[in-house]
Amino acid sequence: MKRKLFTLLIILLTVFRSAFAQPAQIQRINPTNWWVGMKNPAVQLLVYGPNAGTLAYTINYPGVKLVKAHTVENPNYVFLDLTVSPTAKPGTINIVGKRGSQTLTQPFSLRARETGRKGGGVTAADFIYLAIPDRFTNGDESNDKFSDMADPNADRSNPFYRHGGDLAGAARRINYLKDLGVTAIWFTPVLENNQPLTNEGGSMRSAYHGYGFTDHYAIDRRIGRNEGYLAFIKAAHAAGLKVVQDAVYNHVGINHWFIKDMPSKDWVHQWPTYTNTSYKQQPITDPHASESDRKVTVDGWFVPFLPDLNQSNPYVANFLIQHAIWTVENFGIDAWRVDTYLYNDMPFMNRCNQALMDQYPKILIFGESSVSNVVDQSYYVRNKIDFPFKSNQPGGLDFVVYNAITNNALKQKNSDAFPLYETLAQDAVYVDPTKLVTFLDNHDLDRYFSVIGEDFNKYKIGLTWLLTTRGIPSMYYGTEILMKNFKDPSDAEVRRDFPGGFPGDKENKFEAAGRNDRENEAFLFVRRLATYRRDNPVMHTGKLMQFLPQEGTYVYFRYDTNKTVMIATNTGDKEISLDTVRFAERMKGFTSAKNIMTDATMSDLKLIKLPAKTALVLELQK
Image (tube, rainbow, N blue to C red; front, side):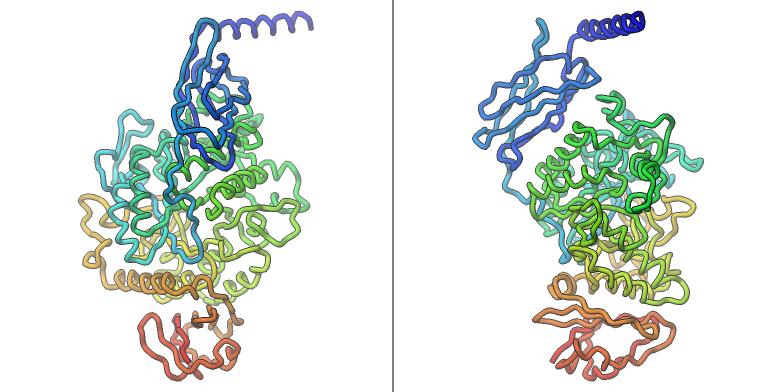
């Protein structure tokens, strides 16, 4: 035993001497800068470089105090706890590291906070448009590919490679989005994804979707770099559009710089052998679940090339939280969409959410928890259920409403609105269901128009529900021009380029002249509904009252002290004469109505004809 301890001591001394034999360097500090006047005076700097953790650090700057330096397993890291007094002035802090005769001085910028818009929030008054930057529109062909990146390819003929879309192209389409009635733009992640091609299903695929971060503080140069993102956000804000950023806390790309040289073994979740998440939601909320099942769901890796971060490690948690705050402060985004929310450590998510909300009280955070029932969905947002864990997340993606509409109410046969009615009838479990983000499809799902069998009448019913019921509506790019396809055989089929967004496109569907009659009808239908919703507060702040569906009809009202709007839909194959006596408590005193889609006046409200597969939106009048 003594011999083993002696041998171990010799090994440690050898490693220690080897480290000290090499000169230290500081190659990176994250966050890359900070600000004076933040509500939380504390900030933890991750300092990285060869032997950076072997230096003794000092800071001499008025109003800034180095509280503690934390070393970890890897001598290339040190974590510096700073406090920034409210009296501190903007300037350059010199971080000085010494070891023997070596002295390193690393500048760190402490900036004044700009007064511009930051964390402004997204509400039920908004209409979100989701797009994949690489597939939306290309405004700068010079940044399509770089030979020094792990994936140097760009080829629009290959559905799995990058296609060249970027922020410069998206900026040129801001007026298109405004004309459509959109008030907020959400891109899939824009951070650097310097990931190699991966073999998925026998095909080599790129990380064009953006969910494998390799540097938190760099916007991918193929999309437009930090300066391009800042320019886009300023242009969007100037035009009245909000910006939602896609956050990923659960995992990073296998090529992330801190994965290649981890600060400690527990930086990611470690298993004796590779363990994938089960993708099962139930063990998290199941009061009878085994701990082993819960651990596999939460701590298992999403896929082998996306290492699962250990958010119970305090340095990992601080890194992620500070990056979130830095992003809002630096770029001025309005809201966070959080990827794979349910796979995160929930106490960490509460801490991260609270840090953002403390600094930016209006910010909306809505996570992706792909669940199948209202109880499970409510677990991840502010709720009224006596769960042992209470989430503080204000919003969330409403997968239950999505399923109710697309996979039940508007399925290709036997359409019936009852699943939607039943889902909304359970809203009492939420503290504020109006902060849930509703949708009909997205980048991970079959496209809506294909799911409903390319039935244009059903298309209009679903869009009517989306834009008139409670919550914050979100629409996937191209839905307004009837883009279609299923995920099978690949995700690429539901992520095709927007026609007209790329040089050389034969059709330009950003323009009415490039769309066929049916596509123009769809575009105008969405625009009419979206602009009515935008311009009429009753549609987003008014109360919702729904009536039991009967004989294929579903009727509900949005109302406040100023207006009452009736939404009546017939999902069946036969015309219905709707007797409105049943709705007297909401229609009493109204004698006529305006059809907001046609501007036609309806003078008799006693019996309303609803043709097969029809949606009516009527503004009631006295």
